[in-house]
Length: 78
Image 1: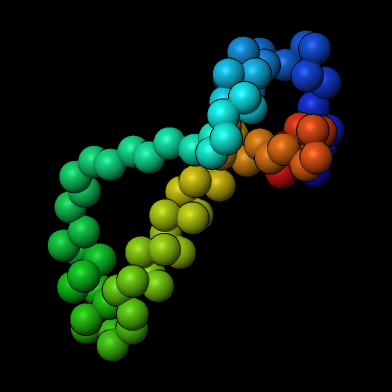
Image 2: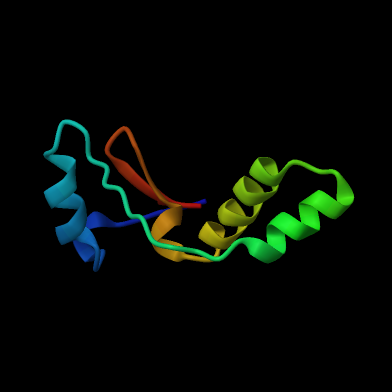
């Protein structure tokens, strides 16, 4: 975990905009072909839902923008 200096942070404009909102979240949807994952989970008798959640989370960890968190006004990068 690394504390971010907001004054020098390139994403400060984004932070300042969303920090003023009561519910600072947005949603994004897009089509995704999960046929191979469905077949994989079905053959092994494991949960499709849990497998999808795991893989989406692992993919999000690779995107730096998703690893920033506001901890009581302090921005940290996980």
